[in-house]
Amino acid sequence: ICHTIRIYMSQLQHSIRTINIYREVRKTHSLEKSQTTDEILMIQRRRIATRLYIIFFILALVVIIIFSGLNSQIQSMKVLSRTESMFEQLKVQYSSSLLCPCSQILVLYSKFLSVKPATYRQVCSSYFISSNFIQLLWISDLYSSYYWNIDMKILSIQFRLLASLCSLAENTIQQKIKIFSS
Image 1 (cartoon, helix red, strand yellow):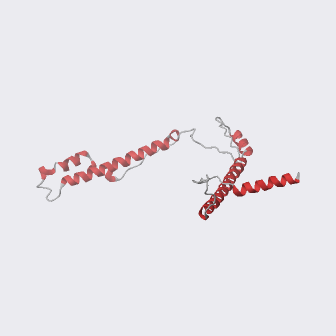
Image 2 (image 1 turned 90 degrees about the vertical axis):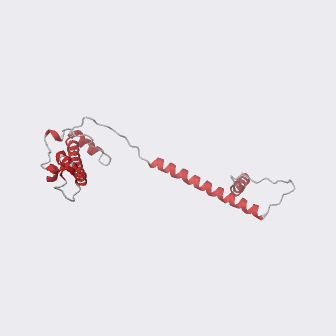
Image 3 (image 1 turned 90 degrees about the horizontal axis):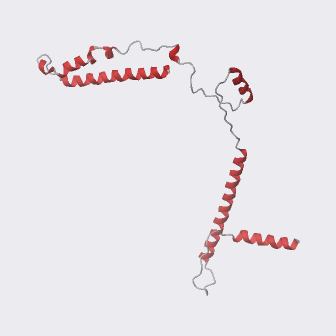
């Protein structure tokens, strides 16, 4: 029995030493039996590459098996109507993993809170950004004797831009108040 085990062990060692997953290059002539040093070197490199591949493959399998074994199972429960006592009980039972996101507020802020901006900048409520004033500047060619070297058309564009900025500020504030109140 020991003799058979030794034979199997020597065959296993020989198989491990000569293992090669790369295809062997076939000789073109049957008479060509000897191998050149380049071919021997190529075979040795292929065997080393095969051994490295097998080692890394086994390591990857071991890592995957260990990770799968250590990965804890996550169980999600959704409790819709929770009371404070139920929350306290769950907190005691699952203190390290309890997650309670508040995705919806039960009482809207608009029920007990009213937010209104007191005032905007003075320029946003002035006559200078009104459409009447801007129109007056645009048709200022009629009054060119009163406004010597000032180009009123450029001024009207600048006041339109100012009016647009004021309107944008008011709309942004109103949207943010609406989001906050809901």
